[in-house]
Image 1: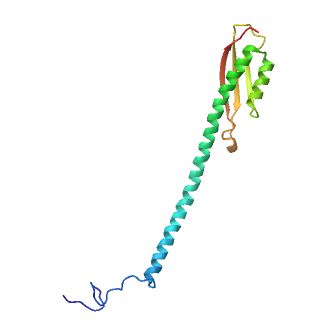
Image 2: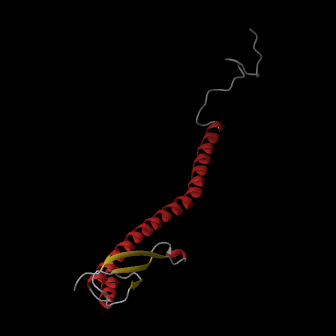
Image 3: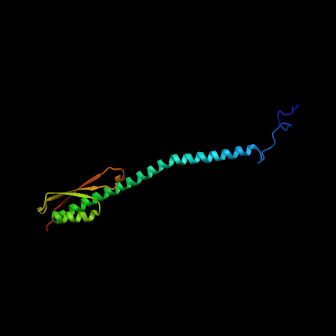
Length: 150
């Protein structure tokens, strides 16, 4: 086997020495690691707004679901109250049950109601969901009860 000097080859005189920390190859390796860290930071910066948006949307979807359950409960409570009391007492009870949320109620027929007749309560509740983004969402529910003897 013939080896030429300075051209490299397996074990030849021109073969580069093995890796050593003082060599320019070490600088290239450090730059490569910094580049990888930089690309990871860039990827994180690109994904973070999307992840935040998804979390905020999930939070508001939960608020909307909770408000849907609340308006259904308020309508049932309003119909029950209207079946045993007059309209003014029903509205007071409903506003107290709604707390700080805006609520509207429509009772049909208006009091006084005959025992055994059906009373319908239609309730609208201003949802807390998506309020920070501008839209005002009114949720509606209806419940019917039979008027009881007073």
